[in-house]
Image (tube, rainbow, N blue to C red; front, top):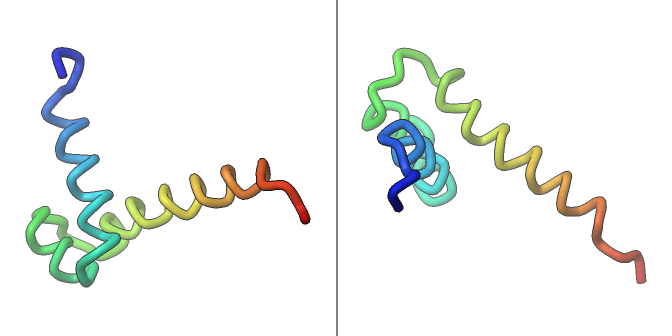
Length: 59
């Protein structure tokens, strides 16, 4: 936890929040002016999912 920064903690919290709550609620709680800013957190998760799926064996 010593390496954790406020920005990293905020980013992680928002990234987890968008998995469970409506993005409009997360946007407002995060203080984002536009949903497009909040959508970046969703896009990051989609990119990570796509990246991990490449390693998945086809059976």
